Image (cartoon, rainbow, N blue to C red; front, side):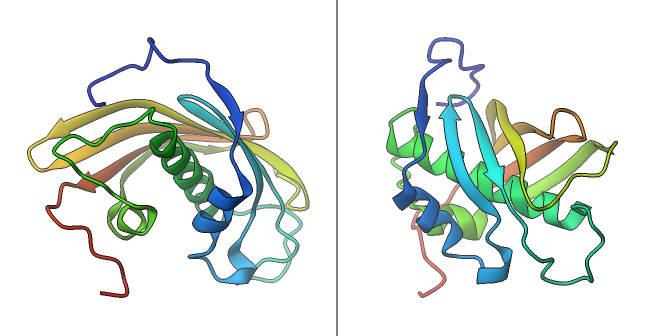
Length: 173
């Protein structure tokens, strides 16, 4: 499905299974696995996060921008992978795109309207990933997304790009 605003299938709600979370979080080193629970309310996803200790900087007492991008990525991957598994997203041209294929190729194309308004306690916080639209241009899919952590404490728009490929390779190939 692409070029859609998802109005015909909006509202399906389900917990993202632990197996999907493990699949998504498995590509991160242990100190960077922040997503603890996720719920898919297609085309949005809601997540719960916990950062016990920053993996790269001394404790600041709040979540920093780099950690928010990781949280966004983990929740976004979980949403896209589970949406694909549930048949809510379809890759045209017979693209299988297993998670590792998506993870290797999906990239942040732009980040806009990034606002960090209030500090977020890293021990326990919530966030939302919102898939707004998918468009295909030339040999690439573009995913227009938004995020919101802790009810407006951190928000932004992210455009993701996923190049169309003929054969999915994993990082092990």
